[in-house]
Image: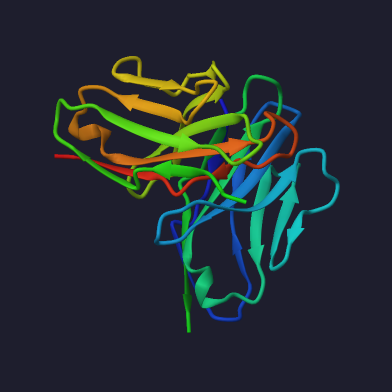
Length: 116
Length: 115
């Protein structure tokens, strides 16, 4: 069974600093996808970034980048130049990428608080 | 472009009543997923549907829960004879296809409270 581990229940960071949110995963599959979602206090789930298991380069989307270390089975999210609006819960998730098994498995999440 | 639409946003039911949660996927998306989130936890997969077909229901409780995605209209998650433990946020997500690097786009969720 797939498993996602986020070891940081909460993080506090000063505004404008960079922050790294940890995510490790466990799977025996060769083909899989990794996602990060943001959940602000209003409750919606916002897609941030995706990394495929065969992608050779780390994914980037604006201030978000994914530090993908396949051998270590880690997919950490890096947020550069943090802003107050980045305060939220962040979830790492994994999806199997073969037909018929499209569910996402989520970690427990990390609550990020950006201090002014 | 309208995103994934879920309604109602909040739903209150008494024990023993039925709860019906609706989800309209994004335009052009034919794959729908339902997840449940308990307080301070991550989302847990419930069911994956395509039009008129249930593809994977491995996360659905065996009793009282059912889901459908008819040819016309929204996907429905139905909970019969609700109990206190059903209180949670229920999220629907959709994607244009079932594979590749397509992210699942989520609705705002339905917060179900059981009195």
